[in-house]
Image 1: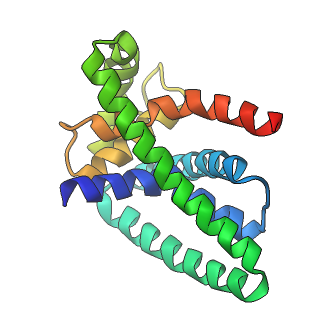
Image 2: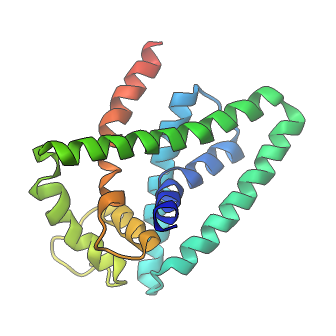
Length: 194
């Protein structure tokens, strides 16, 4: 159950709000493009949402659960509207949703392989340097007042994955996002090439 909750939370942070935005705006492109655009939109939305919760001092799992429920209900509503209007758009939307789960499964396997291979990909900078800020966000103690405060997209995303997991001890889900940036760049180049 822990794994499913954490995996679903990672999908919610990484793709759900972006997919809903794309459906609401009736954005159409290739499936690969929509997956990566939804990733970027979701990270941006998650950043803004968490930042506002940090300002209000409300960082805990309940606002994320409520937001996720709202987004899923709204996504179902948008999908049903698409189904009534155009079957082709509806099936493309389903492929985008399925594709986003496939991307996360791929990243899980990649993370397993890299972490077992002894690679330095998980070295000092991306785990320990940024993780201190992620832990501050997770503990509802945002770091607004620090002199070296700057863009917190990655620490906030990690903090939300900790909230979904219920612990900061397990860093697997937060680290699973790291390869998506690399593969996103490759995937977008491949998508435009085709």
